[in-house]
Amino acid sequence: MGIQVEFNPDLALRNIAEYKSGKRKIAECIPKPLKKGQVYNFLKKGQRLYWLSDAEFWGKGQIPLTETHGNEKLSRPLASIKILEATHFLNKSEIWTKGKYRVVEVFTDKKIHFEALKKI
Image 1 (cartoon, rainbow, N blue to C red):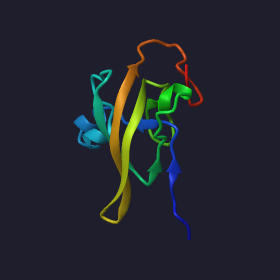
Image 2: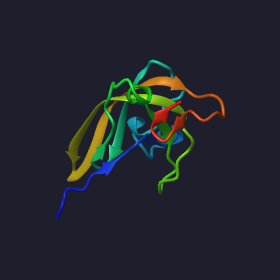
Image 3: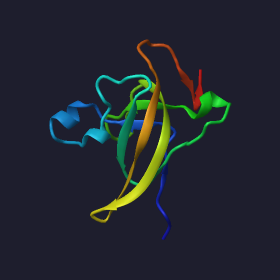
Image 4: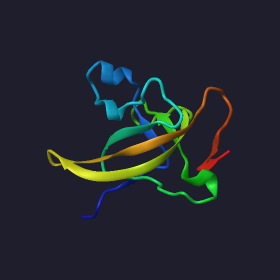
């Protein structure tokens, strides 16, 4: 028996329509509108590990915000974000991860903004 964790190189949240239809909590979804500089809460099922860094290399710890459609089907990055905090907790015997992220830049074009974890 081991400790089951998932390392996430991005933050993948659901479309806000899933909150509006009652399927998800607001923190599980991408806010509309997504605003540069704004801090938002996130919520993910499972024990997830995110990169927390303010290092000078690779965009000072920025990671992509993507939209998930389930089964690891992700959109291209919608924004560059920084995870500010992440906490694991139990809810009805299930492990969840909650935290906060700041939007550094919102992408409105089709350009490539990340190469792996490196912010371009």
